[in-house]
Image 1 (cartoon, rainbow, N blue to C red):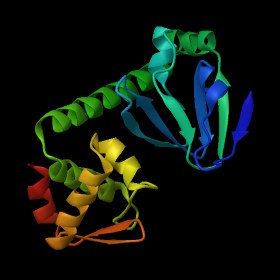
Image 2 (image 1 turned 90 degrees about the vertical axis):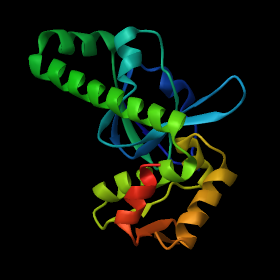
Image 3 (image 1 turned 120 degrees about the vertical axis):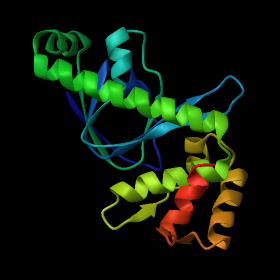
Image 4 (image 1 turned 135 degrees about the vertical axis):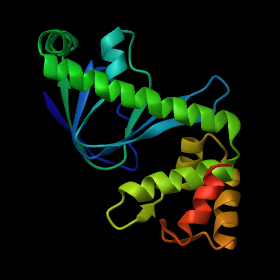
Length: 194
């Protein structure tokens, strides 16, 4: 089954998120969860093509995040039993799934360690450097709002705003219309070390 979802300013996918495995064929989504204290934690933004929330399908305990369309999306669902059969019977699929999950675990461990031990400016510097490394023009596009960036870094909007201002004032970055140019990458790397 293939469905199209419009971006509609971040329309929540609601019932669509109950489908066992979601394959994002086109578009970009955000994965978030809300803590018992009401704080939103943003696990990340994901661009097509990709499979969303594989862990939920593997352990069968339900989806771990709210998926919100950031752009118009095309999504296909894959029944849990078919996905598990592919993993069990096809070595290439099994290897791919294990590599992707291992990469995600490593990334989450790194993010957890940074959140637990580094101040906001260092986490922001690291995030900017990581995103600049994969950008085609070495410019980093900030998330739609500072609140989204704050959720990614695990801080408040005010805190991320102050960190951006300090990096800009110190001449390490330039920000214009959600685009960040890294002016002094070597100094930004030092800041990212904490």
